Figure (tube, rainbow, N blue to C red):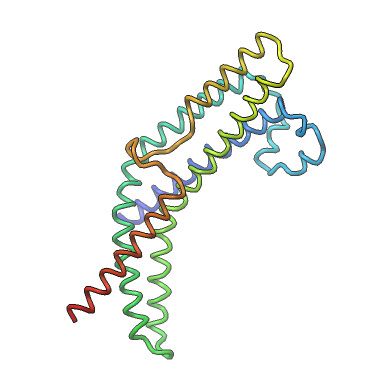
Length: 223
């Protein structure tokens, strides 16, 4: 059961990474169309392998608009699918991490330098705690960097509308694309309420630490 759940989470991570990569290509296309810096050889050398794929094709604004819209629909479907699983992770991983840390503290207090089993137990408990923490951190990280890509696209389109010499039809297309990026941001939220960003892991680790300290203090009191 636990293995299947971990595999499901890995699948979600792969899909989050895939959406982020596709959005990076869209961003590179937008910058290629509207940014003068992208025409320099120095900029092209700075592109990573994913963004460099934008050099293999030429897409107009209408095509980018459609691709962005389709990608956003995929992100919405992924968000709805992984919401329940991520909520379960937040609840169970927090409790599991706290118990593992508590057990690790007890082992550290009792283990001797020459106790190989105790050292192995500490490494195992630490690894399990890191795994649970990673299950929370990874989707929050990809949610943050994906939102940053959208912000870059929106900024570039805004500058193009206000500073580029565009004809009437082209300006209308750019404005429509800009409006789409404003209305359809790539923000992942659990149940539409809990937003996945890097403040969530900080709150998660803070709560785990607080519960750990409280549980240790109470165990000393009862002992």
